[in-house]
Length: 619
Image (cartoon, rainbow, N blue to C red; front, top):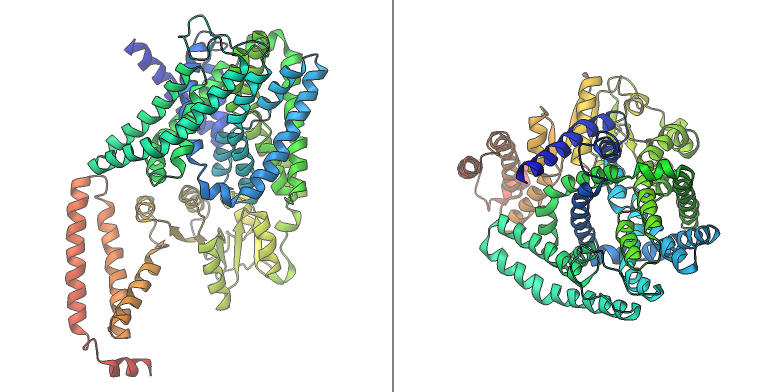
């Protein structure tokens, strides 16, 4: 059994290692790489895993459970409140419109109203995993399209619980338990009783989250063993998933509820941090499983029906979502991205279709076809986004954004400066340079921000700064330096790698979000690294010294010296950071050395209360 498990693990990991880099190299994104790899190793092609895709779907179900726990953690009350207008507005409009359109489609196909409503609700779901992964890989996480898609997906996630409560009320009979499944609490219960039981269980989990889970995590946290805290978090997730199985509902729902109730706790960020290493692996495992589970026998037996449903659902969701985006004021290019990324059917549909099958709202054969349609629809968003970026947006969506205005023509020659990323960090640099007579060319992938910047007189290009054609159009061949100020450290490093290869004469100055990010940049061979919080922290410390009675000149000089010594220590510690004991020992040495050097510097300066010296320096 262990040998079989290791064999499957080897196959899955090899699939990811082979197909994802190829897909990324072709610009298709990692999700499509996982899906295509899963299709090829699945039972309908090479047959490396699973009989009829069932074995692999057991792994997929575990992946769904963990991903939906993380999705629940994303429902932080502050985030939901901040996006409340778009969640309740665009989310409700998009989901209601999609449900009604799919309801009408199934009525036309000859199904009853209960089956049509159930199908419409399941088909209205979109994949949160695909949405977040696509925008993150494209460097578009801060765009209005990304925030809007996130808001709609949050509404869909929140809607799952009332949908699961509604479905039993439409069922003509009690849910059917599979022959090999264990007995559950809902066996034989009428629809209204199942709905009532679900609501009771959901409220019980919310109560337990506040009065059991959080105190339990506080107790575990006092032990100060990170691996034990991770084990406790996994215990809560798997425990809630198992509880839902015993009751008769989806295990993914239990994990999602556990995430929701912990989203508002003080452990949210710790949980995300601890489970983050599993997130990418589970995401890849899920999509490999989805690809391997696509039943091509059904597709071959019913090609027109399956592909007709896939295309029909994609078109319906695209029309409804596009209209929703226009209704809520998205610009053309942002609306295209918003529309395409929400056009597929999401992972929650697997949960809903399984429950619909238990309730016998749809025949088993139809459920199998709809599962295949759901999995197939997930293949299209990465392809459609790539097509939109290459074929549509350059000619329609961003023409006015990309074309530079006459007063802001691109500066070329040795004095040219390019800023990649114009968020809070890059905008400060840009305004400082402009105030000192240096015109910089700005690259940013938020079209709404681009429009505002152009009205302010900045020279702006819309697009992905890691694309060589965009860099060349911005004058990278002749510019003197590039300022890499993108929010995402991963995209910043990707940009640096490409620029060093294609534009070796371009000097790079790069933003680091943290000390760990700076270590990675040092490993990549970068020298001009600027930690975004370092200068601000030292400036605050200087002001504290001044308010405590230190001379202004002495305090400023102390800040400058500390910065110099800390930069030197950064390079010393970078080589030790993978050995925890050596890193801690070296850190203590560096701290003591800094304090000694600063004490020597302080002794060389005049008395801290000698304000006459300050007045002389200022004169």
